[in-house]
Length: 164
Image 1 (cartoon, rainbow, N blue to C red):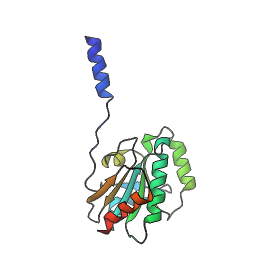
Image 2: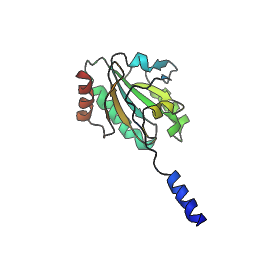
Image 3: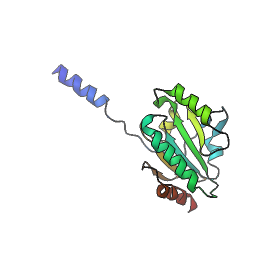
Image 4: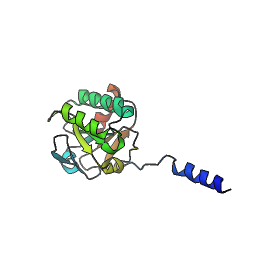
């Protein structure tokens, strides 16, 4: 009996965590790979598209695909485009950070931000093994979110949400 109860407790504690999606743009201030700080208030002033991910092998294709497709379809939209990397989700955070610093170029899109504690990632309600895209208007209200696979069509849908 004790063994059955212990097994049930272990199974329940290892179950997936349910995340609540942020309906308002979470308040944050995060560094880019060069150390410059960026705040949600500053980035959201004209609307913002946020890719929330982690530097893991599982998420690499999704985050790179979304970044490429969103940049390619942005056009003249004045909204910010940012990629928030949860550094706590990677067993190779040091290596990932080193590559980010080496490959990152100031002034390029998306604006790359490092979440070294995982708190901002959690505030968006994104699981550790997910990549999600969020669209917020100038008032910080959630207009749209998706965890779909990246594509040019999906990226166009994201930007269309801000054009309304």
